[in-house]
Length: 143
Image 1 (cartoon, rainbow, N blue to C red):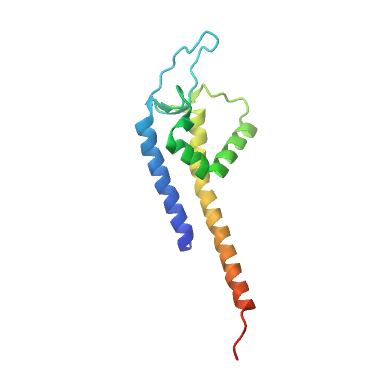
Image 2 (image 1 turned 90 degrees about the vertical axis):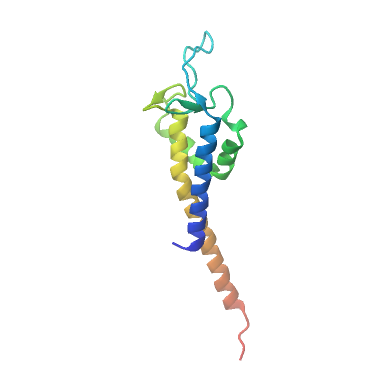
């Protein structure tokens, strides 16, 4: 694995560590409450083992969440598309193993993000090598 690939993967890991710490600091206890008369269950937001973000407010009001969305957009979009295709019946108000539907999608985004940044680094490296090869080929030879 080349140095640029390692650098991007380490940067991605550091981002997810920051995200986890920021999520823990911004989260609040998840309680199933009756929100109104037409919806007997509360939306689950992004819930992990009783701590949640995005139930009482939009998760995207938090800078760490907006950063995740923009930096990991291809992974986020692919995870959402995969969920819509594979699990169209899953609603946002259920918990499975203490994690909400949004939480499971977020975990998939974490995994896909490493593939995303590996691929981006690989493509950039390939383009850089092609450019270097083209520059060598087009350089006038001395002699």
